[in-house]
Image: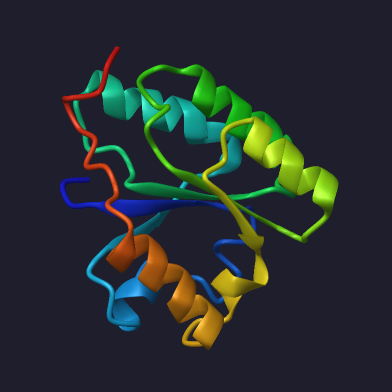
Length: 144
């Protein structure tokens, strides 16, 4: 993938209202890509090895199989992947929020924001992450 993109990790991607063109359809100049949760580490490390662009942001469902917190921890253990901001999506339970931040999450938000395309919450979330925050453009400059 040659242009910046957001990686979405949720099992219901193909059946949810979330689609690869969702962000472009809502005025954002970035693609949304999905990878099966069990494949994410292999996918990210293959990007590093082949000097492909890494995602600018990862949206990770806390409730995916294999447990989202475990996937977050695995990603953050790899030095070449640590700079990727990861937003945990879930239901607000204080214990989950605390554990997410302890494992390196950049943010924790209600998962319903992603399914409510065009809503004020959806637009505020993506306005913050895509217009306000300076996201990394991680390619061959990652540290191995």
